[in-house]
Amino acid sequence: MATGIVNNEVHVGENEESETLNGIEKLEISNGNDEKLQRKKIKASEDLCLPLKEPLKQTDPSSISVVELFPFREFPEGEIQQYKDETTSEEKRELERLEKTKYNAVRQAAEVHHQVRKYIKSILKPGMLMTDLFETLETLYPYSRLSPVSVAAHWTPNSRDKAVLQFDDVMKLDFGTHIDANTIVSPSFIGFAGYIVDCAFTVAFNPMYDPLLEASREATNTGLKEAGIDVRLCDVGAAIQEVMESIEVEINGKVFQVKRIRNLSGHSIGPYQIHAGKSVPIVKGGEETKMEEGEFFAIETFSSTGNISDLLGKGYVREDLECSHYVNFFDVGHIPLRLPRAKQLLATISKNFSTLAFCR
Image (cartoon, rainbow, N blue to C red; front, side):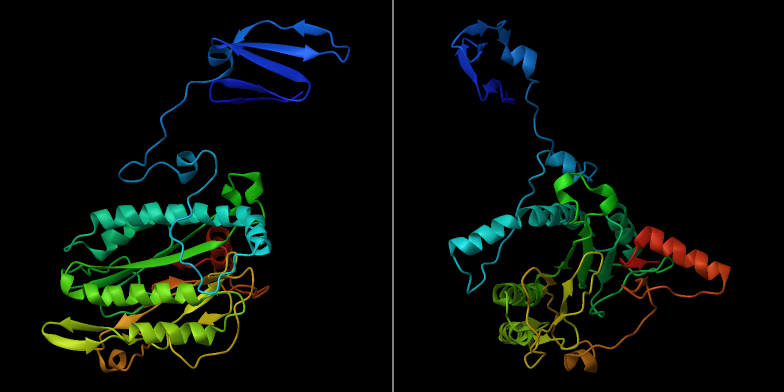
């Protein structure tokens, strides 16, 4: 016998017959000899069902977990860019349905990213200390990076940094989310722990920079549309470069062609591995390695007006400034350490961050 409760009704399966009269549920059971025994009448709405609750809404600042906001564990899809050669065959659609559990696990992490991103955008304003901004972001999610106007990527303020966000700054906020094995909320998600959602957005208070932000946005969407199974990474890069460098922006009365930063790129992502071995270039002429079925990629584009330094003017960056974040190398095996303090430090890093990046 199978009985399930949905809304204010009782649904009966197998050999039972059900009849509803004025909110009263009468259940009868067949004994196999066509003799029916009438059971006690019960009120489904009072005895079996809890009253429907209003759906939870996120607080400001965020304090309710995504799991509580989506109690049925079905997380929103978000924006989808259609692959240019996407097939509509029934076979391919069935393969997509088989991956639903994995995608849903990743979308849980994506929804966390979305809500943190939404809140951070609401509090950004000129005059903020970079450390205050980072600590707020760190409170909401503990792995993030900021890159101000003169830094292309991978910078986070260290504890004594007094940098202030300015009105004319163009700043990228780059942070990742993932589902940890210790916080699995659904048995169906086991096996999909550690999948990382790596996402960044750029902010500029001065509308003069809007075309520059739009250039990166269009280039990123182009890369997403070009990506697909058996696509060569160099072809994705060529498409991104073509779109990005077709755009001009006017800064303080001077016109600049948008340039791509050729030695920065996107990358493949693995469980607990932010850079999983493949690079997605943003220029033509890169490697001919192909994307493969089941892989995850971060499509990242880096645009510049080229007016910051000679290097950026040539679409190239170099390492500079104080180191601010670190990562435990993936699959390096056992490392023999002699000093007890070094062993203790490595153990602390492994326990708290595993192979995920972390900041000072």
